[in-house]
Image (spheres, rainbow, N blue to C red):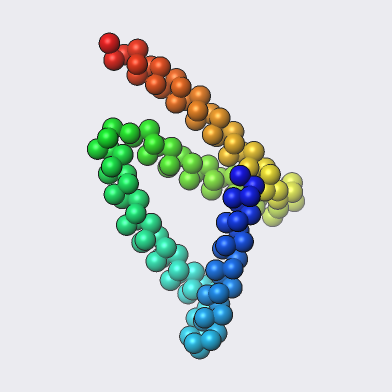
Length: 127
């Protein structure tokens, strides 16, 4: 998980630098806020084009538990990052990627326990 986070951060950093280089090279003079507006807008739109059919497929195949997982996983990631940023900002703790990894791992373990219980319950009530 740590490698994935490091690769993601490295990719984002390199992409950010590349976009700033293009901005300067073509003389666009767009502010960082405008670049974020454009890039995140396009990124979000592209995600909608991919995620909407995927969620429809899950719905069609009665796999709503996976839709729930994706949503909750996203919220868990946002909350763990927010906690770490808050700790760094307030001085109440260190901003540590291993805290994020531990929190996400805790969610995965809890989700696996939930899945086991869910499928046992589903199997019992199918009869």
